[in-house]
Length: 501
Ligand code: NAP
Image (cartoon, rainbow, N blue to C red):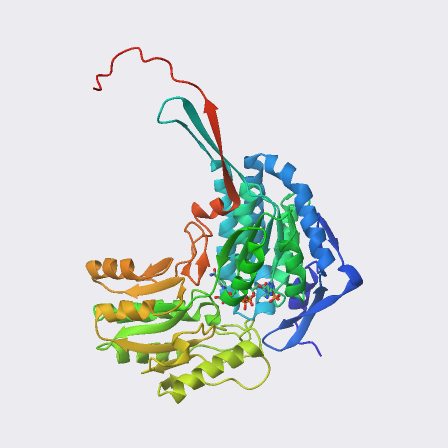
């Protein structure tokens, strides 16, 4: 028997569960569907259309057909559509948050925070749509004029993960709409409902048919390659794991597609002896526990100065141990389930490996029996360097604490990973803060704060965390090409001697 309340059923019923192609909602070829599960119960919430390769190509065709007209659409109107979608999202916050919690598991407060963040990309890029410019200059020899103009890249394929079902989409859709690109969006099969609801909102906000097309599929490895190898596609933008990112890069190399990659992370959180420990614990709670630890920006390892490591670990354990673990819809829930049993098993194996190698569990370190994929918030102290979780993305509510001796040792430990997305630094010494920030091999740093995500800032990584930036002034550049025009305009003879010998 279903455990959904009537309110939950209503928000699920409100979502169109078909494919969105060329401005029309339609069933998948062969009429197939896939189930969307509630990770807190393991029960099916509903079925959505399951796209086949032909559906994906139909979506690309719609995007291709809409591209030329969309590129000519007045920038102000593109911005107004985004602004209007922003307003609708804010008006429907409660329903959208409930929907997101049902399919992804995170507590309602986390879903609300994501929706606020997600909608900010529409507001920010509604303001940027009218600020796309070029340049005009005189060539050094005076015989030409150099004109540069920015034009939309063209149809884009967007692939997003399940952990932020709406924000990972708006971070791409916002700048693409502002730039005048059309899109084929493929959300993760675990969490398609938030993206389908977003497509309905954009349709309502006036986005022309074919500009955004959404296909959900149980078989990404079948539906994605035909799109990538089609000459109508101009760009691939992917957010997800590093191994899948590598595979997609390989496929994209055949046609030298423009590519943006927002990949995995292994964020170090550094705490120096001069830091305010209570502030560091508060920052750690955000960096670790936001989104149940299932964030690419989640603090993956805490490197703490030896003199304060135990104090930090004990205070963190006290706070993490007192968090309410419950279905995300429950009043006061602070920690929801993990997305599925595979993810929970991976977290559990990483913790067991650290314990086997000598770490001490201060709190947690166990699965919670019963329905759903719950894992208890966990703090591990005295974690040895050899523990696998020092090098692998945990993606769960587990905080391993390592200690360091010197500043150089801390920087070396932070950089000792193939990833380079984000790092967090807590210190009250300005010179040290700048030295450490300059020494970190990452795309983003949280300095005395546990969160970096901001629609007005460039989000992205280095090393195996990918390349390209989403958000800020930089984010729209991912969707623009620069065209240069050489204008013949020979210099007239100088009318006076400027005195250069
Ligand atoms: P994932 O397994 O790489 O999946 C991401 C997306 O790729 C999903 O839509 C998935 O679809 C699709 N996909 C999977 N296999 C594919 C294939 N062979 N061909 C084409 N598409 C394929 O990652 P995830 O487990 O969903 O997400 C977690 C990862 O995302 C973590 O590593 C996290 O760090 C990273 N992430 C990075 C950022 C960032 O901004 N840097 C932000 C959020 C998350 P299906 O699953 O439906 O098949």
